[in-house]
Image (cartoon, rainbow, N blue to C red; front, side, top):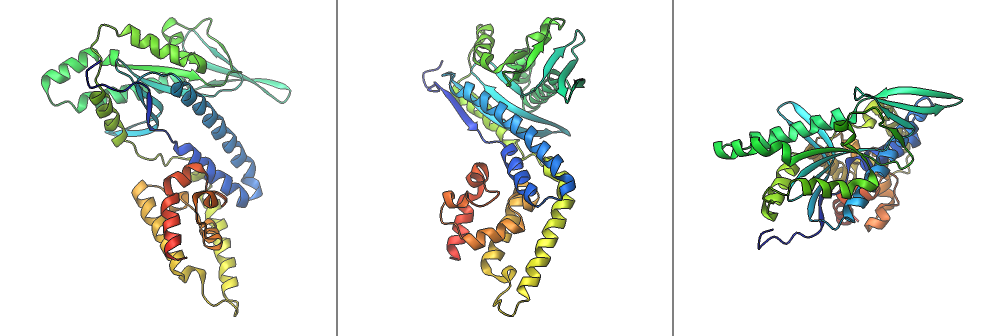
Length: 347
């Protein structure tokens, strides 16, 4: 470790996940969804909740590792037509680890061919179903990161050194976050077994990888942060979320709400249409500009019904904002201060 290297504990440079936003959207959609799709919305919410709980367990293990490393959570990276959705990228002084989190339920069998078979109870039956190999999935993520690392190097010597050590620098591991999952790897090959661990084994696994790189010079704090910032700069919000499949139903719901609002606004007692108020226009403009900036649908921030709730309740703090449907911790963290500021200007 260099004289000026002071990193002595885990540091999250990106801790929050787009998944919580997706779950918030689904929770809000469920309230107005037609009966024929509510069951599917609830199932998607359930699967997202499983994933969030699994990633929270990994975050807990990393935070309590007391190891010097930089952590990026939920990275969506695109490069030359390729993309990767990385649950966790852990950057240590010796090795960079791509973590694929799986909160699987049921019994998992890994065959000698590396196939993953899941067995679970469905009613009175036991169902066996093949699933896409998380080993293969994570290897593709790993390959993309290595390609990005090599492509950025214009110096011949630097690129030659990187090519020599790139496979030692970048490692992949699949973490089974559900402690109740039973996994049978009796017939799996050793190289497959070595890439699958449980959540409570993660810290020791990282320490083992670092020990295996003991002959290499450690990276400095400056190099670690530079590498982390480079990957973080490539991150874009993942717009392939579950609410896309319900876009038409949501639009129909919003159309009904708009129609009802229009009917109410036709009441002689109404002095001004809500859409014509300065606050409504300001909130709508902010939603539009932010959605363009993040390359997402405007209603991912808040839909028309939520915007009306903002105007009705006029929250003065983040705690009050969280009382409004659809505004969870993650969304308040990202947009809360801006929304409160806009409301304050029109209070």
